[in-house]
Image (cartoon, helix red, strand yellow):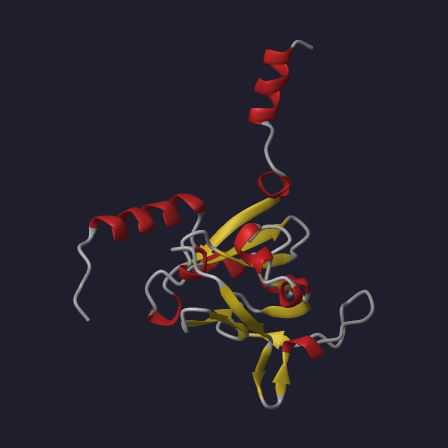
Length: 182
């Protein structure tokens, strides 16, 4: 294989995410502009919650001060324990269940939501140690959580989510509209 063919092949090769996951998006969560989330859905139903590339945390060179999975006094996503084939014991999440809170050095705080109903399988404890992973690799090592939807709901969970094309259209409309005074 000559060098030109090798480079062309590498340029066309899809990433693991593009190859094995379907991207779904939820925009303007809870009415907050641009607070977009991305759900990576694998063919085995498992969904990975990440930040969409348009989320304010990933914009304007923000630096993450802290990530907190302690949702309230009685609820910590870090205490989630699953066991067995059917993943018993995992916390059940609704569409708008908070997963974590991200605080930035500019004193902004963002709550990250599950976006889908299902059982929480794991949260990414690595981003607690290295918050920069969320900024550098939001779709791989910087994911927020892994959720398993119920089998009977696995087809319907995407009803409230946008495809990549619809998401791109929504973002394009945002960029066209003049900013509204607060």
